[in-house]
Length: 470
Image 1: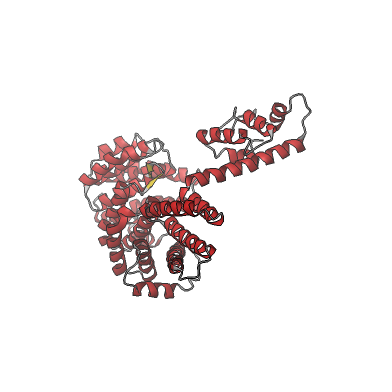
Image 2: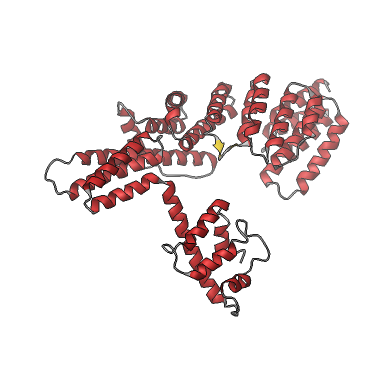
């Protein structure tokens, strides 16, 4: 029973949702089958995890039909009926969480039932709530829906006069189309930059030319237009305008919508930085900090440890140690408890490595619990670099050997990631051998090998070995 579709669905309910679902199943309005109430009562003993080995169809059947021999077909019917109720529950919960959608549907019914006073009151209320909401794609959909409802209501009244709602309906439809078209086109460009894909961006030239020619655009459309132009034309000029628009309007944009906007801008900066354009470092750092302060870059209630680490790396790239340390300590409490200690100590280790305080590096690396494979790999790399800088070559070589063995034997590491670090270990070992006849070959391998971690650091080690510094 634990691997059934029913249990897989119920496992997605948290404790609060499960209690509400029990009430839902027990409500005569939604369910008149008493056997389903009994089945739900039995399942409540195992909620919300449903992981106990004693959870079986036979036990569930006896709880619903005590004293009756097990009937697999009957049990299957009951489980399917409960899935249907669970689906109904999900839809009701979704409806309750989207009050504007509910108001739109009630408005349509008021209009159909010719309840003019009710319609006018709710229309004004829905309009006010819509204007007070922060802009996102949903707001544009509701604007169009409300305009369309008004136009349909005007038609139902059978008034033979100019329809003032029709133009508004068309305008709202255009705005919704422009926003959706830009967002999908941006995502197509974004995916093409990551994977081998060739999407057809139909009508986007016409859309961008039309929007560029307009004197005034809604801020969200203007922002997405400049995201598209930035990506499509790889344009620093359009990116500058995008940053200006973000700074001007970000406080009034929905958090989830703003998160996507920040990430598009951040990814563009990251590509530029990888091309060696360090002028984008302070720009992307400012974007990160804005998104962290307003919590739009948080995932649920926590700051991602990846975002946390990226910000630290940017501060260290600028050699701004004071800001880096302040950020590490200020925002560690905003990390998920699962990764908090590892993220804190790993980033402090990185900071002290840059400050050449190698005793502190070793102290913080020793406190890692390896909550994520990233910290296992990253800590070994930092430790290898620390041994090198401390001239502890024997310890370094020993660690290189054990790290290489770990990489080869661990089947959980993705092949690409494994190759990245194995290449690092092999090239560092060859560099440290410092064979005069093979020095140029080793340098070429460092420059050309893909994928490779710490390429710049390896080149520095290669140069130092040639000068006999270590």
